[in-house]
Image (cartoon, rainbow, N blue to C red; front, top):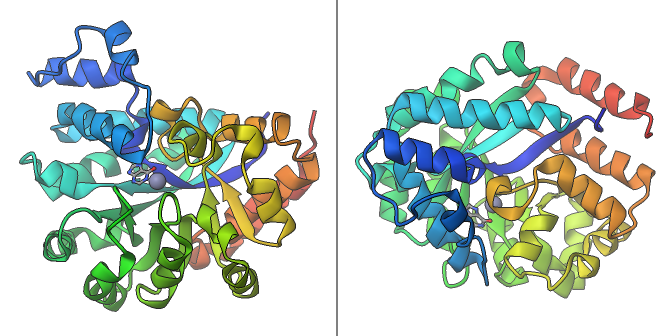
Amino acid sequence: MPLPKAELHVHIEGTLEPELALALAARNGVELPYADTEELRKAYQFSDLQSFLHLYYELMAGLRTERDFEELADAYLARAAAQGVRHAEIFFDPQAHLARGVEMGTVVEGLWRALGRSEAAHGVSTQLIMCFLRDESAESAMRTLDAAKPYLDRIVGVGLDSAEVGHPPGKFREVYEAAAALGLRRVAHAGEEGPPAYISEALDVLGAERIDHGLSCMKDPALVERLVRERVPLTVCPLSNVRLRAVDILAQHPLPAMLDAGLLCTVNSDDPAYFGGYVDDNFHAVHETLGLSHERLRELARNSFLASFLEHDEERRARYLAEVEAYTFE
Ligand code: HPA
Ligand SMILES: [Zn+2]
């Protein structure tokens, strides 16, 4: 039985496995330049974030109907449950779908069909976080927030993803202010490929409550001190960082140093269909390769529930935390 945990950094479109990508494209008459999964799998060699994003946006073209989004989310939730996930805060990228003529309602209602029955079907509680694409304009982000207004009962917060360098968080100040005024929680990718200054900016200008990735903080001791003091959670994604070459090899990943520094780190999968593993595979990898002890893994699992947006249900959070403390490693 895997360690119970929350997953706080997973892009639902990044859980699109190659088989499902091709099946959806065929079902919807969408042409993809890959004859079969064997040919498609050859495209999973990435040199950086941008090279991954190309394939990520290409394959999601097969997602068109509510049923498609439902199947995608259902497949992820089944896998997550098998990996010990009790609670998942799931990102989605509406602009990538709106650009293809797929409406906000199709995306949200489709995902919700799976999320709404997830507790009963998989024993996984869920929340949805809508991400803005930072390489699109602030105006486009604002229009996307407007389009989401009929669905705010289904969305807990907003995030910021896609190509980081050259797109500092400050560009989205107004849209984050508007999101906060609507009662939405705020997170942002920062410090995946971008400099530590983007992390500070996400905190100061966007009011981010969690930082997704946050790796580059290790270049700035004063920032580390601040993140520790303010107990800002970081959603670290080790296998993603290796596959996108943010670190050369897993053995050189800064996660142990980040934990030693007192940072509130969590471990997550990011885009598991692309990066060679779901969340418990990431836990195993950091145990095997980075030598993190069982008590460190327990700390990471505890952190995942502490960093989650479960304030509306403290009883549930306490139940999940008790499960973490009671867990015995084999
Ligand atoms: O790892 C990522 N980084 C930035 N944007 C993304 N969108 C999907 N996955 C990612
Ligand atoms: Zn991400």
